[in-house]
Length: 502
Image 1 (cartoon, one colour):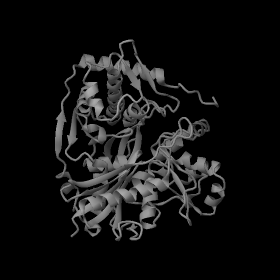
Image 2: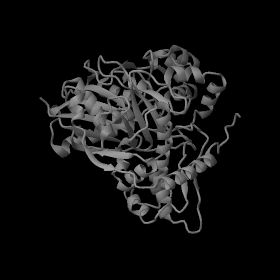
Image 3: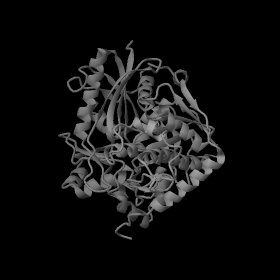
Image 4: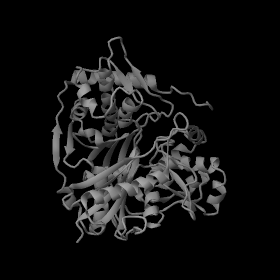
């Protein structure tokens, strides 16, 4: 039997390939960043060909570094930045345009028109999502309306759509496939009937023929085999696929209703497993598909999506240039007792849950003559924790289950100060697992389950081990005062940019 399962973790800023053993331990990984393209303010794009080339490179790097034979990789799972939209030519395989990234706000006014025309409630009821440029549907429509010849080719069946998972699976196997979790992020998928919705497709003018086949997140009937000439030199089954946040939920073994995780990456995403029955949010959360295993029922989740968290730290490094490495933030933040009254609302591309304001913009407020870079760094870390509390407050109210513990993962949780600050601002215990690459691990678990590498969910639960528990230390008065000031700052950042058609 092969010894490892591989996972391609294609994220917003880069691509990772990871190998895991049967105990769920990370054996090796490699990571490559890709280019961030900003054609206009609020617009974000990636080059799909570059992403594919970086994917092949990280796989090669891992195999060469470890000297592991590709034939010892039992299966491959894919996880991806969700909602990021690619259209490509069915025959040539060439993208018609750059990938439009989930953060991109170019379709905000298109979403306003959909709301004014009375479609928002219908879309929310069917998809569990708010009408927002975050999702794939209006990005597809923009490409069809703005790239010459694409609409006509799409109607003839000559164009394919996919989020990054579909693009990579197509490049790996030649199959045009997505899973239920990614389909539920397009704003085109009826999450109760589990099918593409013809009413929404008609409203947006999108032909159903361009959409991928929707398959289980972990599928005994594998999606396809890798093409030896293009990838690893051997044929390996690809049989696991999850959107990155659902993959992290799966990797954190949140298989039962009420279990909740938060992932700290470019953005921040809190998901609570709500089981097999749909709970529709009325307070700014999303209802989404968590995962579907082979012939088992679909499992759902409540989600709070925060657009900018780790990206704010990246901005301190690349934009303001007040740090050289993200790892510096822990030491710098501890050089001051607090943020000195500074609050940073990192609404670079608007605000997500629970505000959903595409016209909000970033703001640093409370600056005085005594403000130092350490205060700004600390305010940046606090902004991550305060945005998470915004979501947690809403999730507690929606689910009726006040959380006592939060499982965390993502690159930023290596920062002990951030994890302690998060526990303090939330007032709940924060649990950090030993294996923190839980997004890649979730994709590996999905693929491994499909081919029997792991036999069941209990075996995966036994792999989950706590590295450290962070217990709240801040007194309630200070916690509530800080949060009240945060909410004041958010109100000042909202509706900063006026849409042209209001």
